[in-house]
Length: 132
Picture 1 (cartoon, rainbow, N blue to C red):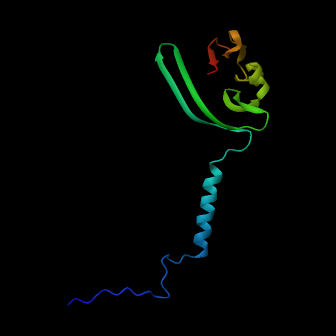
Picture 2: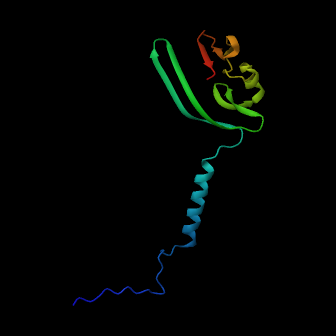
Picture 3: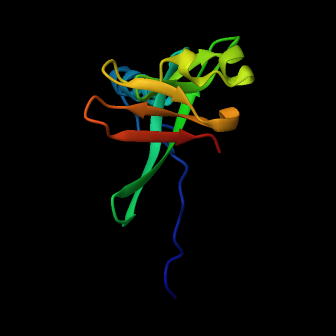
């Protein structure tokens, strides 16, 4: 007859391997860093998606999605051609050029019915932005 396997419970055996306190400190700091890096600082924005469609001649349609962490009284908008937190009253009243959406050398004009704005470059090239 074959001998039966004996499972001894040793007092010094642990189901978890012993790790030094430095190891656990590194694990804790790493997890805190991962959590912190996923958060945006108040009043800042980041582009999370950018899509360009150049299928039509002489026309490029660009769509971007931004993630913003705006302060109270602010809302996601555009400043100097980049996503930014702007005063909510600008968006509410649709006075888009007040948020300075164009670059320094470009001129800003409102579209008819205030559905967006255009940025006109010195050479005459026009960039149009509409709300969606």
